[in-house]
Length: 445
Image 1 (tube, rainbow, N blue to C red):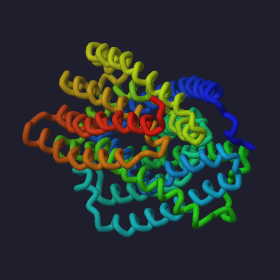
Image 2 (image 1 turned 45 degrees about the horizontal axis):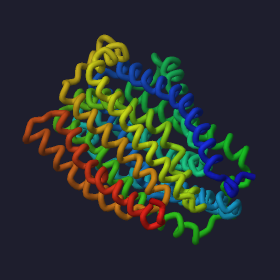
Image 3 (image 1 turned 135 degrees about the horizontal axis):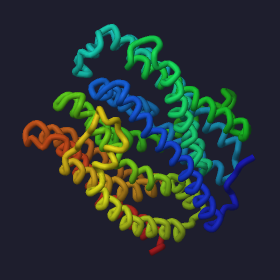
Image 4 (image 1 turned 180 degrees about the vertical axis):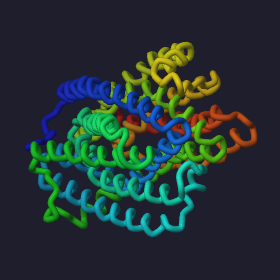
């Protein structure tokens, strides 16, 4: 039986350190595999088909939205239940969340099957590289695999609630490792290139989530989901909190993923490839910072439950100081990005981004990491109203700004990144203010 009732600030810090070290190891393996996956898929598909593949991966993020905040709502509620040592309550939350997501997944897939017959996928992807029938077949395989994984991936919210955030990387490692192995095995067999990629990736996503879930629930049978623990009352509890997270998720995805579609329509598939390769390169910084911050959301939830405000304030101060090192790292990247790209990518698909794109991405990463400090804290303590407002405003202005900068000001790809920076800057100001007000309210200045 697992609980968190007696954790003090010292034990909490020790657990966070363990999670950071484990995450560093596991995320390092995951990053190496993911970079290799990009290399092998880019070389296998070419720049045009790879651009379509990137847009498809963006759809995964949109489908994950359909959980209407269940995952994040469960994360906070389950953490509180564990802090109270109430395993029956914990199991009820877990069981209810799985049933909600299973129902949503069935609705999504059924709706898609009907709607897909009325959609011209060649126009959606702005490409005639595949036939209409191939696009249709490709999307059915893709959406089918994603909705199954959509339900199974709830295990990540449960691991985060257990303050075992490092273990969420295992699923990614298994997915990427299986994907590479299967690509090598089936390189010369069945279906067209893009359909093969989609089929294998869907299989890998599902298998990896099943493996992680089976291992966790075997070790933690007291929270294994069962229909007998389903509770209508728990739906309201999860969704009341999850609803706010849902709005934030939508806004964040409008800022971070809709740009792939804007680039696809205005600049073409090769620009999507260029944009996402540079994005992946700079994600080294957000991934590195994510190693440190990933255990903190649920740690903040548990600390608030025990009124340990001094600990929370100390952690935020340390994270702010870390921003100095990140800024230095981004400055160095301005001078070494091209050699890194040349070493990483296949020689026959050389990518040379402009300095303007690199500079705009540096600013974007700096704002993203700064915002993550305060969004993780405010999410953890369930103070999300201001974040909902700023994220909605950011989402509403992002798309018009991106179109304005690309289509009318002719900024190209740097204009897309600049629009994201402006959208993020709103929370960059109000997030710290909300955090300050939180501590002032609890007299911990």
